[in-house]
Amino acid sequence: MKAIILAAGEGKRMKSAKAKVMHEILGKPIIGYIVDSVFKAGSEQVILVVGHKREQLRDYLKDRVEYVVQEEQLGTGHAARMASDYLRENGNVLVLYGDMPLVRPETIEIIQKLHKEENNGVTAVSVMTEAPGDFGRIIREDGMFSHIVEARDCTEEQKAVQEINTGIYLFKEEVLKRALELLENNNSQGEYYLTDTIEIIRKLGYKADAVRLDDIGEFLGINSRSQLAAAAAEMKRRINLMHMDNGVSIIDPSNTYIGPDAVIGEDSDIYPGVIIEGSCVIGNGCIIGPNSRLVNTKVGDGSLVEYSVALDSEIGGKTKVGPYAYLRPNSKIGNKCKIGDFVEVKNSIIGDNTKASHLTYIGDSDVGDNVNFGCGTITTNYDGKNKYRTVIKDSVFIGCNTNLIAPVTIEDGAYIAAGSTITKDVPKEALGIARAYQVNKEDWNKK
Picture 1: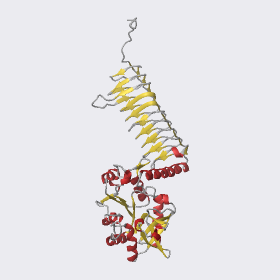
Picture 2: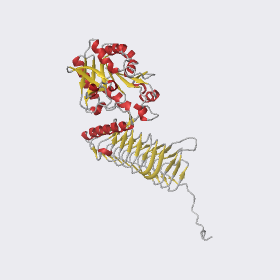
Picture 3: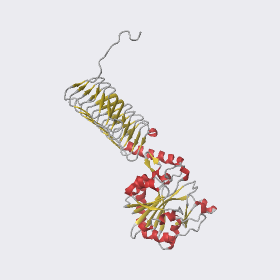
Picture 4: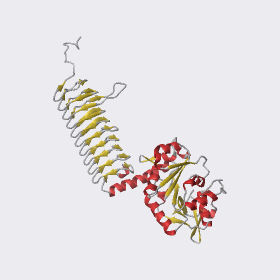
């Protein structure tokens, strides 16, 4: 199987500079969900029909898919025709819209199975609804699937039909190719409807069927911000339920936002207000405390993160982060560490059993094991033009309110006196002091 995803529409109702299918649900673009689903369902190749703002889709999907351009939007059939050069013999092709993020891989597999078992030229997907609205109607004659009529072209009798077209089809490739060649635009919009291929395929002598599925919510497209929010709510519900079924405690699922690519281990607790985005991996027995945000971050077993933000970082096992810590990209924290309140770490490696309990900035640094950062320590890594690294080796003790002016190395076991501004390397087990002597001016305040 291969797939053609139609994603050339402008999405005017979104009122956005973003392509419609690039709007995000739980940190992932709409188009990412549907591309992932068709690949998981066994598609060997995905052809994306693009048009408006197509460079945004290319920047995101890169070479995961093939691209064809629909310069003029002349209907869904015209869009599918743009991909005709990819259609071969003896294969099947799934055609669907790029704004349907809730379609499950399992549903596509069901469609594939029925399509093959019945040897259909085309298998459409339908659902029943009491409010068919603007959906195309599935027309059956003597109980057999006959054709699809778009809502705007329905007669009054056809408008009463409650079986609707979802916009998902599985074709034999060579059958779709022939049908697209014969497609005409004899309708109220003057467009080439993909739905008209059904009747063409039947006239060519192939079998057409419509498989009726139950969950209408799975097939709703997104054309507005309110529909985007509704889809996000359903996706959130699915994802949270999946994690809970896998042994994760989510204290308040209605107020927890976990992206589709996150992995969370057993016996971990997720508190309200947590946002987990991207490719996060959270180990067993972790606690992700209230209002924390993790993006593309790995957390080791038994660690605690509370009221904190971690971006593109790694946290070891049995480590405590927060409250109110900030791990910026490329931070790697070791095991049994403490990154405390109002501590910021950026592009640094921190060894095991190291503690920065409060009010500290560690940037562009390589820090060893068993290091203690006193309150108010700053690695001053930037001279206005260039950034430099600070090296702090094992078992170093850094007193409060210390500035380490990079590039500088603090050797094993050294001490830094509180209030020092260190500009030179400190030898192993030495005491580094860099501060002015205290002078008391008698009666200065009276004068």
